[in-house]
Picture 1 (cartoon, rainbow, N blue to C red):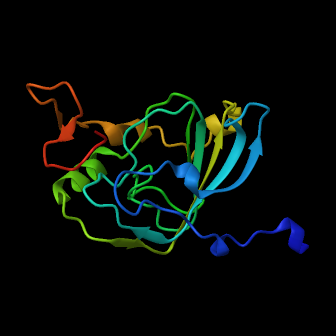
Picture 2 (picture 1 turned 90 degrees about the vertical axis):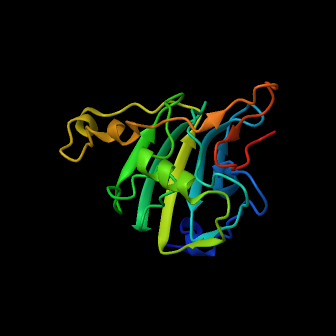
Length: 188
């Protein structure tokens, strides 16, 4: 291959949150195919290389959410981060997950509860030996019949969220911001 067709992902310098809150994964975009609409990508290629997690008073994993973009995530090597789609005991190199537009997803129950139990005073943590990727698109990919009939399809994937419960409370005299029971800061 000539050098124009290769990109050494180990040379990509990731950005990250350095004070509080969980940044949108788009800060790790390597390549973008734009559309004619400003701010809307046809396809983004995003990577999650080794990096430090240092945010204070913050729920560090991605929150449970839905996107207007479709997300196809995969693991190239190492361990899949507990903090991405959270299937830490079942996501192996070569594996992938797809969350189409407006499909709810986020940390699994086990990962969510483990994060909450660590509380507010979690120190810096370096994520090492990993390289995950995501294709994020404004289009909804069509699933092939062979993918749906694959013996590797995880028919029980949804079960990782069974038992997920809220840790949010609403202050009695205010309908303002929500805070977690254990004091982890959320947007105010």
